[in-house]
Length: 112
Image (cartoon, rainbow, N blue to C red; front, side, top):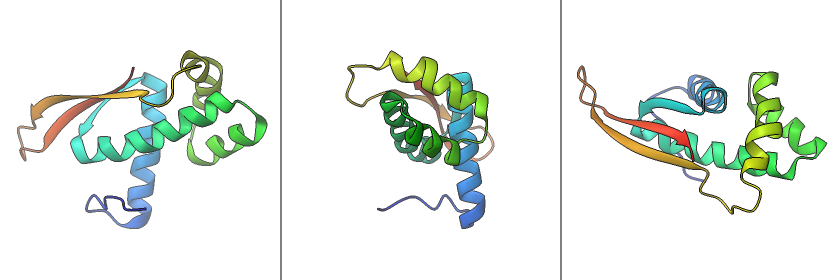
């Protein structure tokens, strides 16, 4: 599987992505750069698919990735059932324009 390195070391990249996924499910909307959002989207889609399964092994798999237990509860109790019949496409990326300091493309990543 190909992925973006985001200019970070392996451990830092994993931590950043885990934090972004956790924040996305906690707040249901985050603002970040476009490459990060595209990476987070694929992980978030997988987590929602786990939540739709809803069994104990799926919950444990989600707990291995998401930092906060309350967020996993929210994911499995509220977010997963919300997308019951939907096959993918749980997130939306909206472009905001360029960041002022370094002209990075900024986006809003939100749950549909």
